Image (cartoon, rainbow, N blue to C red; front, side):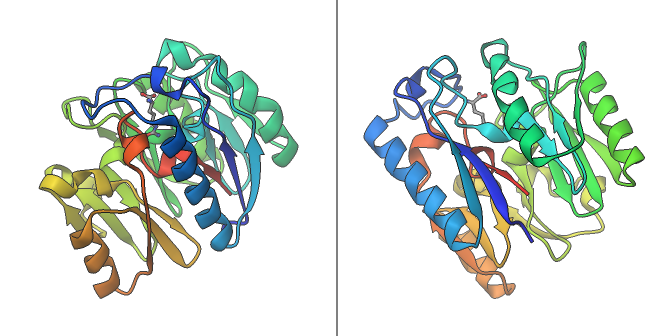
Length: 256
Ligand code: CIR
């Protein structure tokens, strides 16, 4: 069960963040509205929120998930792969030290974005991407091993339609992964029940299990219905403005 989440309000220059999407410029009023809806949903799932002020020095800083990987015992502060985002970790460090007695850091030359790390209970999938390199993944694997977790590496560098591993795969509990069709036959996922999403629903592969609910992007009815069929309880959220900046549901919070 998660009890807590950290979020950061989007800054007025949110639209100046990094993006590869060709979906237009996000409207700030809608960004704030969708972010508020997301925060409400986390609270409705029983979480207490720590809401950080907007940081206009870092337009991507509302995507807090990338700054850390959290386990039951520790917080791993990452070393972000995009230069424009480097300062975001420094801002998160004192916040996480307030919650976790053990914090460790990914060191150079390692880079690692939290969006590349998919936790599936005792196992972690570590994505190699254009943000997370082998050294970063190796450092995290060693740390997780010391805490008794297993991990495996999934290379997504050849997939040009996703930014991070979790843009394409999400663990939603009950040994189930929601996964983009292109990745569904990956041997690493063979032991799991899979819910493949494809074509126009690919964006919805990034979803999060928060206690009894699965938060999913609104507008993807096939995935929503499949989740219901399999006994999950989806909660749909408008995400269009974050999608314009390559962001998904998971990236907007750190949950623990
Ligand atoms: C970036 O390119 O870094 C941001 N515009 C989006 C980050 C999304 N984070 C995530 O999927 N974990």
